[in-house]
Image 1: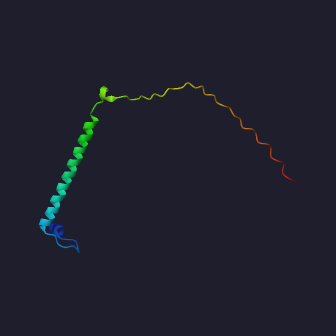
Image 2: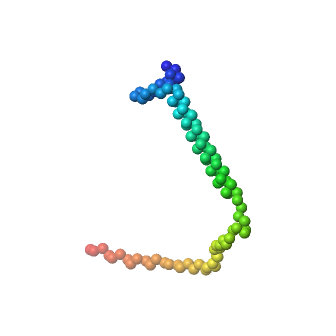
Image 3: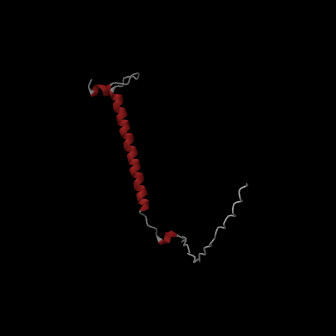
Length: 93
């Protein structure tokens, strides 16, 4: 059995499809793929164009700049010593 015969055969339990119907399905798939590709390219073009815009000082408005001020703190370490535990009670005789 040649590969062309295997491709042309329908799966068991499914009706046979004619060549015109298969061609229309293929053409529909190509058109859908072309539409999705064009939509993605158009969307990426818009996103890139918006990213290239520069902020004009006049349009910028009032922006706040937050600056963290470093405090000078003196670190004092507490030295703690563990107390020795009481000696164990002598064992009963």
